[in-house]
Length: 502
Image: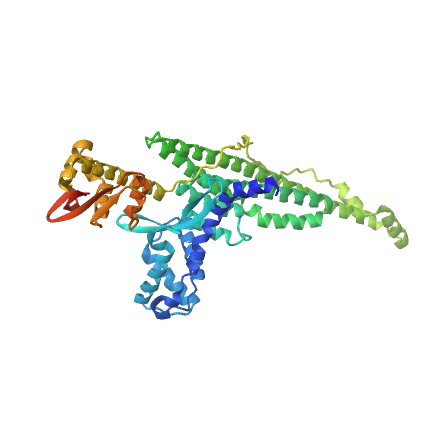
């Protein structure tokens, strides 16, 4: 087999899978059967159509109206959609019932959709997570917004013909910047640059047509104006808006006070996005100037074509023959009269005034920098949280095993006191410390270490990953129902007794 083909399969597979992940939630949602919900009461509804309608509703509210959505607003929209498009008249309770069911499915019950794929470079399974709807709490109200992946999925499902591709991509870029996905934003800017290059080639084709056939060129020019030039003003506004968002992101990073590797990586991604956006703005400005020149050249070509048509119809030999045949010299008056009163008044062309007002200073275009570094894997917030929980749970179990090696029996209260003396009282206020013992006390007996460790729970999987290569240690947990310990305000646990076995 060709080595190039094999290298392409391996090196490009991960990028292709990450591009496919934005489609994964939609097809998962279309598998949801409404015929099984409430004994088929809502079987007439089509889940795929409803999902696309909800995504369009969120794009309208989030991107065009620039506001987040509350749950009552969503319910109002879903009621209108179902009644209008499916002819299903719902009561208020029924609308809450089906609306809540569909919303829970789209949110995946608050969890991201896990898209699994094989990474041939590292030769292991990877999980990429994607959300359709995101939420935040402000002023004691839950606000919902569409994710950047969902916006990109919705836009990819239809070729944009009636709208500016550059404007549509800039809406996606705005979503990427607000979600702090700066690397993804850079990829969107690359697509904007490709569209600007396509429009430049189309403009050159129009000029070639005009130079050979004015009338066919005029038709091509009008089509280009309708599909390309008409959006320039809107595109310029969106460029300015996204540039301001990037500046705000840089200012926010500068006052954050961080100096770790993640901070510098984020700063580099923001600067790279800003450089690429500047390149796109410069190219877009050059295209606008070129189109302005094309408009002037088109007007000149049309004027020359009109004059050429007039000359082809004024043949002096034919005119002389006509005067001789009719014996009438009055026809000369049509040629001589304009010469008696030449027009000496000069005027300034309105088109020239427009050119003077719209001319723009030349912008310095930096050479586009191509990074040779391999793409870095994006670490999501939930992955960072999972890493933190794994680390903290393993740390607490390390200390618990050390205590069992010293004493065969002790209480949780005694263990808390020892941990406070060793690591300060702040350790008891850590939410992971509280959740560790809540999960630990779900079972009465543990064997920590060895290849035969249990995998019955979420905690077992974490402990097995970190302690499987150790010698087994067995201990039991006995509840002291008469005593309650307060680890932190609002965090209370019942005291228990740990006892080493064997």
